[in-house]
Image (cartoon, rainbow, N blue to C red; front, side):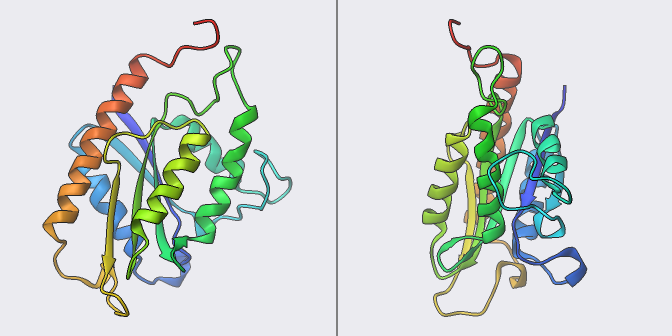
Length: 205
């Protein structure tokens, strides 16, 4: 059975802006790599949605998070993709992580968070530095709310310090980036397949 992935693009740019997104370019590379393992990926640009602040699964009228949450829980793989701003994940990315905090209290009858059995990987783009810091933040947050992180589940690109070139601007993707993308896809699809076939044991299991 094919695996399903949901890629959340945490760029600050909306689709209406019609500006090229470096984060979107990295997601495209990951999507292509995952397709080799029979993984179908849906991409959502978070800035196009009204994700209200809060830590519940539904913050009331006008909140688009329940729709995104349903797609996330229907997927086997989550790709959390963010640009680096001020050395941090984007504000849009952080808001989504805060909304996933609700998973801590949403468990099945065996005490497992509803996110259990799903695999998460990370994509980071930006200038100067911060890729390791950002991926570390996302790894910890995603693991806290029940996702499983595969080995080497991050692909990133950072530009020259004080430079103005973005990932979307470069003509050729460096081999080191494509190698990281391929490893992310291979390990993520493998682990997602294992967990889809056999879920984590629950309480008393």
